[in-house]
Amino acid sequence: MSAGTPRPGEADVPFRFRTTVDIRFRDVDALGHVNNAVYFTYFEIARLAYFAAVQGRRLGVDDFRIVVAEASCRYRSPAFYGERLIVDVATTSLRSRSLELRYRITAEDDGRLVAEGRTVLVAYDHHARRTTTITPALRRQIEHFEGRTLGEREGGHH
Image 1 (tube, rainbow, N blue to C red):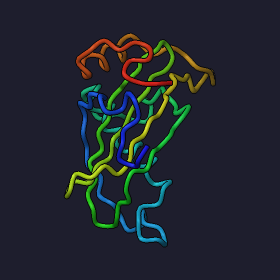
Image 2: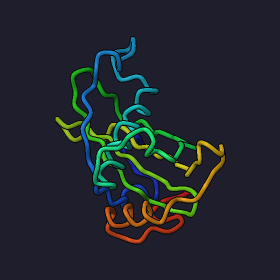
Image 3: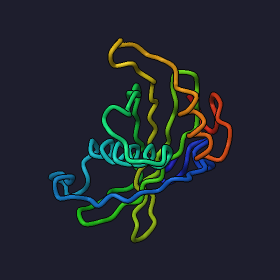
């Protein structure tokens, strides 16, 4: 597949959340483009903003009872210092103990696809140091925000 061709199941992800990220000088590597590892920071920035929007409030450290279990990024085109990126986020799968988020990063100025990503998040009890279930309240908030019922393998491949 070419760099611009979405894989099956990606083109139809219904993104309902969007935020922007300005590329900082520290994000750029010696080759003059955003370093590959920085995209995971962009996903994190967008993920935190997404959950604040889902829950309708600013979140504190104690609100995060989920951990990242898996993360991947597909790089589509380089991004450069001074550009503003648009990061779209959607929950594509919601299970009893985990959920999947998809990300799409585009350049604000020309709309080019820069990167696509995926994270699997697991509900986690930090005191007991074990996985737990996603609360019914969070499940309802996510499904309400996404505007649909989410089940296993909704809109994604595992």
